[in-house]
Length: 327
Ligand code: CUA
Image (cartoon, rainbow, N blue to C red; front, side, top):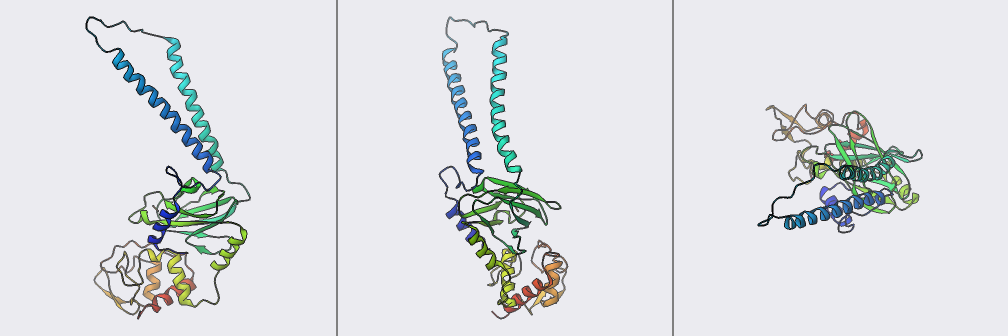
């Protein structure tokens, strides 16, 4: 539930160990994908070495020598020409077939998969569980097929988990799906692999493969709305989960958006030269219609959260921002 991009980067370094060539293999797709990769790799390496060696050999062997004239070269050799067309074509068909089998498997989710919704926006990920709760990290159960139904609020993003060897574009205005079966508990990095703007490289998330259903239930219980939490605490959770932290600091440090520290009640200078007071209505409007009153000195890059935050979520966020007033 941690959204600090720096921590995610550290996690990535710590978790993406794998071996020298590859990230860890943590899904049922990985073995096949790696097999196809190595097959094509060694195939190409073999012919590269063979062709280069023969070429160099012939350069030396058939170089021009004093007293030796050019030999007549053959004009046509049916057997040779058919051979060098059919044999490589057959090899390409083998490569295609091996890739195609794996591709079809990746494109066909089983019916009984665990469903997680994915919402991408500049520049964070949100994962919606069947319980209705949202989080910015993806928790799934080991050995359980999982299907992601994904959409984007703004531009094209792409969800990539190297450890699962699984990647799929996330497109605005429609759903795209992908699936995988994790087979190794642990934490893995999730990347956006479609260039989507300034902070594309920071659009990371954490995938946690829970060892069993009990671990998943425990996580979902923690995630569920806790009645004992104060509105401020719930607002802080939303601040972390919904990506506000990406651009708005709470310690006064500069970022893409104004800091929330001491923000509430202050007078804000706007881009159009006017001023306004940071109070409930201004915060509410800025979350739903970020372009209405852009703060002076900042780029108008904030996405709208209209339709994605409930009224009470807005109240929680306002309560949280209010609590940072004098801190
Ligand atoms: Cu989202 Cu790159």
